[in-house]
Length: 126
Image 1 (cartoon, rainbow, N blue to C red):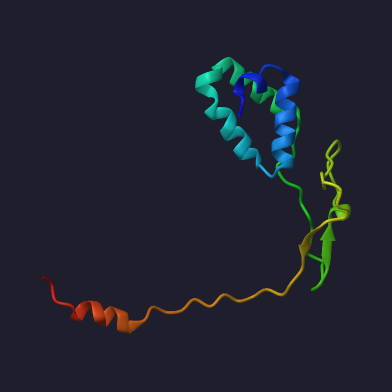
Image 2: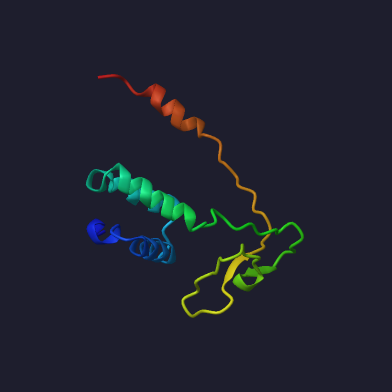
Protein backbone atom coordinates (compact mmCIF):
# COMPACT_ATOMS: atom_id res chain seq x y z
CA UNK A 1 0.00 0.00 0.00
CA UNK A 2 1.36 3.41 -0.89
CA UNK A 3 0.74 5.21 2.39
CA UNK A 4 2.19 8.50 1.17
CA UNK A 5 -0.32 8.92 -1.65
CA UNK A 6 -3.20 7.10 0.01
CA UNK A 7 -3.60 9.28 3.06
CA UNK A 8 -2.78 12.69 1.65
CA UNK A 9 -6.42 13.51 0.91
CA UNK A 10 -9.83 12.52 2.19
CA UNK A 11 -10.81 11.58 -1.36
CA UNK A 12 -7.83 9.21 -1.62
CA UNK A 13 -8.71 7.54 1.68
CA UNK A 14 -12.36 7.12 0.67
CA UNK A 15 -11.30 5.58 -2.64
CA UNK A 16 -8.98 3.18 -0.83
CA UNK A 17 -11.71 2.09 1.61
CA UNK A 18 -14.25 1.56 -1.16
CA UNK A 19 -11.76 -0.41 -3.27
CA UNK A 20 -10.71 -2.54 -0.29
CA UNK A 21 -14.33 -3.38 0.53
CA UNK A 22 -15.09 -4.10 -3.12
CA UNK A 23 -12.18 -6.54 -3.23
CA UNK A 24 -13.44 -8.39 -0.17
CA UNK A 25 -11.55 -6.85 2.74
CA UNK A 26 -13.39 -6.70 6.03
CA UNK A 27 -13.68 -3.54 8.08
CA UNK A 28 -11.27 -5.06 10.59
CA UNK A 29 -8.66 -5.58 7.86
CA UNK A 30 -8.98 -1.96 6.78
CA UNK A 31 -8.48 -0.77 10.36
CA UNK A 32 -5.51 -3.16 10.71
CA UNK A 33 -3.91 -1.64 7.61
CA UNK A 34 -4.52 1.83 9.02
CA UNK A 35 -2.94 0.94 12.36
CA UNK A 36 0.05 -0.71 10.66
CA UNK A 37 0.68 2.62 8.94
CA UNK A 38 0.91 4.37 12.33
CA UNK A 39 4.74 4.52 12.48
CA UNK A 40 4.83 6.19 9.07
CA UNK A 41 1.80 8.45 9.39
CA UNK A 42 1.77 9.48 13.02
CA UNK A 43 -1.10 9.74 15.48
CA UNK A 44 -2.77 12.86 14.07
CA UNK A 45 -3.10 11.31 10.59
CA UNK A 46 -4.45 8.04 12.04
CA UNK A 47 -7.07 9.94 14.07
CA UNK A 48 -8.00 11.95 10.96
CA UNK A 49 -8.31 8.76 8.85
CA UNK A 50 -10.44 7.10 11.52
CA UNK A 51 -12.77 10.12 11.55
CA UNK A 52 -13.10 9.95 7.75
CA UNK A 53 -13.91 6.22 7.84
CA UNK A 54 -16.49 6.69 10.62
CA UNK A 55 -18.12 9.52 8.66
CA UNK A 56 -18.61 7.10 5.75
CA UNK A 57 -21.15 5.25 7.95
CA UNK A 58 -20.21 1.81 6.67
CA UNK A 59 -22.62 -0.85 7.94
CA UNK A 60 -20.94 -3.48 10.08
CA UNK A 61 -23.39 -6.11 8.84
CA UNK A 62 -26.73 -6.46 7.08
CA UNK A 63 -29.33 -8.63 8.80
CA UNK A 64 -31.36 -11.14 6.82
CA UNK A 65 -34.36 -12.78 8.52
CA UNK A 66 -34.48 -16.44 7.49
CA UNK A 67 -36.87 -17.54 10.25
CA UNK A 68 -39.82 -18.04 7.85
CA UNK A 69 -37.72 -19.43 5.00
CA UNK A 70 -38.40 -22.97 3.87
CA UNK A 71 -35.93 -25.61 2.68
CA UNK A 72 -34.66 -24.75 -0.78
CA UNK A 73 -35.44 -21.03 -0.49
CA UNK A 74 -32.78 -18.62 -1.66
CA UNK A 75 -31.98 -15.03 -0.75
CA UNK A 76 -30.61 -12.79 -3.48
CA UNK A 77 -28.98 -9.38 -3.32
CA UNK A 78 -32.21 -7.87 -4.66
CA UNK A 79 -34.09 -9.20 -1.60
CA UNK A 80 -31.99 -7.25 0.90
CA UNK A 81 -33.25 -4.16 2.70
CA UNK A 82 -30.22 -1.92 2.75
CA UNK A 83 -29.58 1.07 4.99
CA UNK A 84 -29.88 4.49 3.34
CA UNK A 85 -26.89 5.28 1.16
CA UNK A 86 -25.68 1.66 0.98
CA UNK A 87 -25.48 -0.19 -2.31
CA UNK A 88 -24.18 -3.63 -3.18
CA UNK A 89 -21.39 -3.85 -5.71
CA UNK A 90 -22.00 -6.91 -7.91
CA UNK A 91 -19.38 -6.33 -10.62
CA UNK A 92 -21.95 -6.59 -13.42
CA UNK A 93 -23.67 -9.73 -12.14
CA UNK A 94 -27.37 -9.41 -11.43
CA UNK A 95 -29.24 -10.60 -8.34
CA UNK A 96 -26.49 -12.74 -6.80
CA UNK A 97 -27.55 -15.57 -4.48
CA UNK A 98 -26.18 -14.90 -1.00
CA UNK A 99 -27.93 -17.65 0.99
CA UNK A 100 -29.71 -20.95 0.37
CA UNK A 101 -31.76 -22.66 3.08
CA UNK A 102 -30.82 -26.31 3.65
CA UNK A 103 -31.68 -28.85 6.31
CA UNK A 104 -29.38 -28.83 9.30
CA UNK A 105 -26.78 -31.59 9.34
CA UNK A 106 -25.99 -33.23 12.65
CA UNK A 107 -22.28 -33.33 13.29
CA UNK A 108 -21.09 -36.65 14.67
CA UNK A 109 -17.97 -36.49 16.81
CA UNK A 110 -16.20 -39.81 17.09
CA UNK A 111 -15.25 -40.98 20.54
CA UNK A 112 -11.52 -41.37 21.20
CA UNK A 113 -10.26 -44.80 20.30
CA UNK A 114 -9.44 -46.81 23.41
CA UNK A 115 -6.84 -48.84 21.55
CA UNK A 116 -4.71 -45.75 20.96
CA UNK A 117 -4.66 -45.05 24.69
CA UNK A 118 -3.71 -48.66 25.46
CA UNK A 119 -0.92 -48.49 22.88
CA UNK A 120 0.65 -45.50 24.65
CA UNK A 121 0.58 -47.28 28.00
CA UNK A 122 2.30 -50.35 26.56
CA UNK A 123 5.30 -48.47 25.17
CA UNK A 124 8.47 -48.65 27.24
CA UNK A 125 10.47 -45.56 28.09
CA UNK A 126 14.03 -45.52 26.79
